[in-house]
Length: 623
Image (cartoon, rainbow, N blue to C red; front, side, top):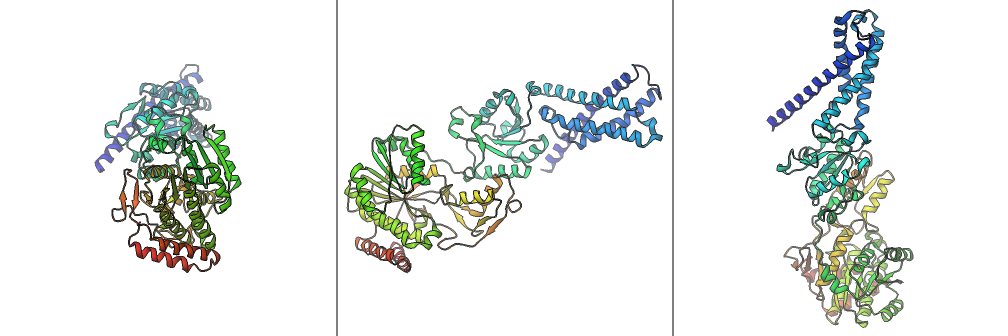
């Protein structure tokens, strides 16, 4: 390792020495021409040629000093562009001013200084000479000619020299005068080191990002890899932050793999990218076969999960989608979005509260839905701790009545959107979701309707979740509030969560509690740090992070066990079935009666904890 460092240092030293030697020749020619112009191509009148030669030594030293001070030797000649010209203008202007001040301030040493006219003329000629040398060097070293015609202030480094990187470089070239200056690639593939792709060199490995950014004055980094792990992307973002440059990424993997990358789809890295989750393979044929030409009801259709469910269901070609939502604006927003998009599916917006039995029975009687996906719920943990009666009414009793209405209407499948907080729950929200699972499993064994539930963890950017809160706090200048430095949660994107819900719906035979593999849990404080970094700010310096303590009903770590001890495998790699058995019918009826009693006396939270303890004691295992 030390030997490699010395070798690199030696090579860099030789390279800079070569640059200095060539520049010295250019500066000597410029000085000679300035002297000849000043004295009409005759020998200088004051001191003759010996004076001119000795004075050039001072001119050379001062100009070289300012070239180094202005960073003109930190860049490789093949990557010099119009955006670098101000460096040379500054360096030569400063050198010319310094020489004039030396002559004026030390009159007794005038014999060592050129006349003012030579100094001024030399500054202009030296600037032209140094830039001309670099233009020639860029041409000889394989650069393009078009850079001289473009104001290419953006100096872009591409990370990933594979197919997607090739496509991005090609698209950038097609921008013509708007093309940024691509300095080259970074890639960890040893076989690509030093290679040239579309005229752009592979300059090193991904770990060299900071050095390359510094040496080549990079202003932007674009990740051009179709598959990049969370660890690698986080390291790139961290190095970009340390180097003071933004990191962007190609927007859609599918387009890159299909031979199409639109430059307009190059975007900022988002927190969802840093999760590094491999998107699930979607069995679209099975989903279309299940949902195509069916009447599908989605409750909570205006929420984060509900609206994405509607979007993806619409792509499967159902006969109609019933949008059940009690929020007027949320219902208006998703209904308008679908109509503007021009979907051919019949969309029926229905303002309704699932707790309103009369209204919901009328909807079932009028439209006879064949599939119901129940996403409506009270889900905010601290808020439900303060309003436990409403959580029981909505999440348990209304869900049970909705299931009974589904049975009466002959619904084929009923899917409950559940949560990892239903595993060994301590919060009111988690307990009510667990009771809802139990209530629907009970209906499943007595009727033809297939009832099933799908558990997963936090969904990025869902309403009321931590990501929108952090984003708002960062926008306001902080502080970003985190409950505990060790708090961890599972996360997945909204689109992935909904895709897996639909695939679990395909797999459902009735009575299952599906558990989604959420990958590795994420520390909330690390999520906050990453979001601050992606905003171009520094955690703890620009934006403070404050720890406010665990709120009522929260755990440090949510449980979502998909090991063989707690879950069965399915035909899908990321979908498992919990080993929890259905609760005996008499216990379910007793549980529901407790919930009805509790809804009228919400101060007796011990009722809920008592029944959760009974369920946990009977089940013996945690999902």
